[in-house]
Amino acid sequence: MTPERSYWNERMETVSPEEFRRVQEAALSRQLDYLWEHSDFYQAKWAAAGLERGDVTGLDDLAKLPFTEKSELRDSLAQHPPLGSHRACALDDVIRVYSTSGTTGNPTYIGLTAHDRDVWMETANRAMWSCRMRPEHVVPLPIGTFFIAASYGEAIEHLGAMLVPVGVGATDRFLGAVRNLRADFVLSTASFPLYLIDYCEGKGIDTRRLGIKGFMVGGEPGGGIPQVRRRIEDAFGATVRECMGNGDMLGLIWAECEAGPGMHFIGQGACHPEIIDPETGESLEIRQGLTGELVYTSLDRECQPLVRFRTRDHVLVVRMECECGRTGVAVSCIGRTDDMLIVSGVNVYPAAVRDVIGGFQPRITGELVIELHEKPPTVRPPMKIRVEHGPEPGDLAQLKREIEHLLREKLIFPSDVTLVPAGTLPKFEYKAKLTEAHYEE
Image 1 (cartoon, rainbow, N blue to C red):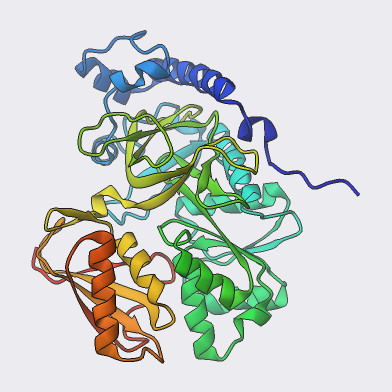
Image 2 (image 1 turned 60 degrees about the vertical axis):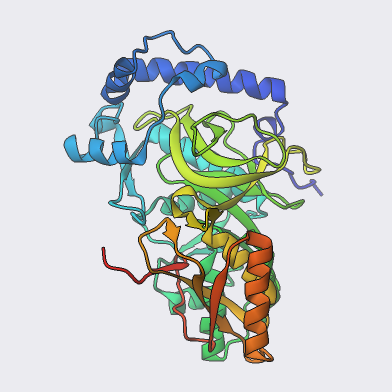
């Protein structure tokens, strides 16, 4: 019997630090030359910054280049439709357009050439293999076709697995695929399996009898939270692994391996990651324990290459080495920098609040909503949080005190927790919303 391959692309996923630098620098040089020739957006942006061709010759010079902000892409798209002045190829060469979800403003449109599609598919396959998707799996995809996650369908087919397109808001169709086609591996947001657990409970369906063997989850923080993962794995008898990408940059860039925790960088040759101080913009040396904001630079993109694009994803570096053999640094996503709240001078991420409160399961369900009574990021203490209690929570007053005490101990802010019955708070099939506005704009 032929032994199973350990990696999708062993050379790139296990590249030495020295070779990684050579690969990234060579690709960066080609990408910058391409932009100087083809991108009106970057020619104007860099000229305004007083930069000339040749000022950046390698990774050490990357910090000389200004950041690219999401707002600039929106302005570019609005002023130069259909794909903005940051389109760096002929429109006739664009074979596909995706959209971001627009959760932080107007959506942006992402064009791909045939080459871009192949690059996206390659890194997606690296991520899928790392997360244990295999050719024998049948994969229902509960994701809308307009968003970049739809690109995963093509990668699933290329990996050799059987793709079953389902779409968002079609839970019965999803369950039909699981039963009738023996679909057994799911790629979705972290919220979807939680939603599916509640949906099945309401229908009297035993989730363990569905035969789902694995979940590959991303699109939002959650899959890496131990309590969330445990609930999904216990409910389905399946493994859960986390992945992460960025709609404007690349469909999948990070993926968890069997060793865990944290997601490995798997975008070697396709993009270059930096971690910056979100306040000062300083590029930080990547080391274990570092926290900061992810910034990406395209290395092999034709349609809309981006340079030093600020993602607002806030990450923690959890591993520099791994027994799996992958050499890409491993991170966990704490939340989005632009989702950060400030309570009594303390920075608080909603995903971190969910992480702490999740430790009280099964006395709670894991569902919560942070009430915002002023326009964020400032929150007047105590932070008001509604939390669903489970069917056997014990003394509710005691549970409230315990949750508030742990939040103060772990995250250093005062809270006012209101416990509500299970089923009270909304469930989200796509991405969970952990905050709720109670103020007038």
